[in-house]
Image (tube, rainbow, N blue to C red; front, side, top):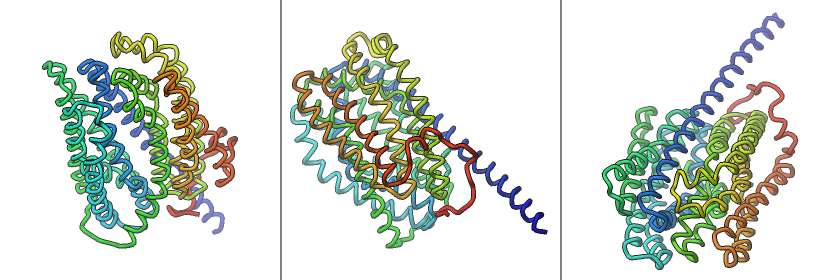
Length: 448
């Protein structure tokens, strides 16, 4: 009888293992395909906007959308990752989480708009009144920008990554199609480009909630503890989100103030090309967060190691190829006016490698209920970025910004690996080795 029970248990475990591996693989493939699709759409959009607007107009577009986006990001309070984590842990039902995230998002949006009405005109005071006006218009759509991602995060936490990815693709697809229409009908105005971008955001907001309600029967259900837990986890995650975002954007933020729009346009193209292969580690990070939040710590560690190793191989091979190809690729794709972007892109490519690996480790830490851990690394990165920009920007212009960013990203990754070793007992050799066997399936979502 004992042998029979053991045989049945082994068979059940094997079936569970197969189901889990199949779900993980399916989610990763769908997320990777979505990232590839978004990359292709964003490349097309980048090329179309550059050719429609030229270097100066491209720089104005970057500035007017960047500052409202920064405020929206700062006001998000890490709720996106919090939704995924608590949905995966199943501490609250979908109605409680949906109510908490929607009410919180509306309040967040109101605060962002009030602050932005003062901050955006100040940040864009060096630009024409028309650019400032478009920046404020973009800001007023903060509710759609902020709330549009929350339904996708809830579905991500339920491991319904097909729906999650569908919602994420809507803005990029709309923007690319809209720019194609503007290019076809020869309407190259900054106003039209911004209008198309806003349309994509609104469609994602409406489509996200429609799909969530269709897939998940939810109703209005206020639970005070759900609000508290979302905010408690969220602000810890936001510490790392803010430092990560600032570390990525600080160069462009300062360039938008201290250099000519043309130089900012050249640098924006360099950043776009250097991060063209980030879709793979981004897909790995999203699936790692979703999967790790649904399983126990032992299984989450295996997922993190596998994601890190596969991302490392992809980034080393891909960025090496890009380093060779960019002198031809950038002028071909963006036009001869953007040849000045080539050297900056090559300088940024090593930073793109380490930045992608850091992204995987950050979401891995969040899945292990350590949402604040990445903030230490990114905080150090911000300090080094500021110092680097202070020293190099006056001397080398946007090339100095590229050097400062790559050095800061590299230092952040090294420090993250140290924190993994010290705080999580997760050594580098364990990350590089990956999984030596099948993913274990014992335990629960909150798991042992």
